[in-house]
Image (cartoon, rainbow, N blue to C red; front, side, top):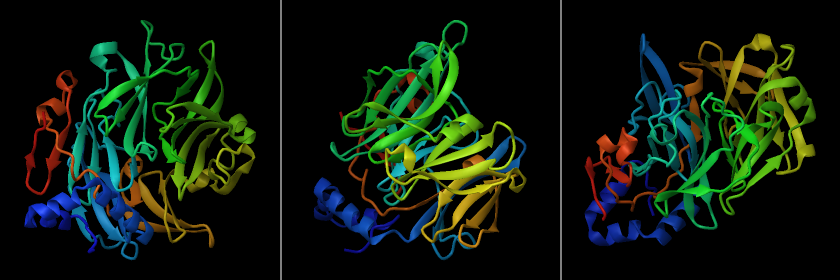
Length: 391
């Protein structure tokens, strides 16, 4: 079968009802995904945000082949979920489905969606139960991934509610999961005594979402660990960090590459060498397997790990929003010519997938911007501009 990418699936669905029935069949979607995953995608999806003028900017979503990045994009895509302030938070991606959330600037918009660029489908996620209107000030951390046991895509939300003194530490968080299959948010009981930093990203590895968290005692941080949440059994677990990093670094983050968990310490307490480094967990769940891959001194001005590429090069964001490519073999850094907000850079392979193509629940744009009536889902067909409703 011809690869379905960006435009072809809608053409196929319009040809006849038989093709539409075949393409939207769950078994066909799963089989198609297995074949395309084994074939390895040749397309890259790159996102960045650039300031146009004061308090005004633009997001760009560009398609590249591995050979043309970063000089010549194949096509520019229009992200269907527009940010109300600056740019959308990309929580993660799995099987060609990208999880988007309009919460990057700490605003209480409660807007989130699942987007599959290959078939131009977006499914809006209803508001979670914890909102500013229901609980007052709070901050949250998100994780997204695929539960292979349940054949389900899940968004995890760990929300910390403040008390009357705006203290978010001593109150256990409220944890909720949105299931695409079940179509609603549900509470998850937990005994978390960790605080996941609001600015911490998540990494989906081995069926679980991971964050760096602070261990608290009497409201005071006494150490750091990696907290994981398995999407299968819906349980939290703890992983140790290298002691040398816990003792010396102020800020750490996690990332994922090729099925491995990465750790990114990027601000040392004493401000000396190894200001930014990247570590890999060679054996999942084994603390002693943490190994440092590379590091940069403070003078290199590296601010953020963006992505590992299949060709072995590593994309890094420098202060000032300059995107560079680093070759760990030659230890050479090359400018890409792309400049933007360092936090907005995102690069991943675009998996050719039919996931979401059969979703059909209506959710209005007015509801998307206010949580008061968030009780259903919306699928927007970008090709036709229509939405469909299911009672």
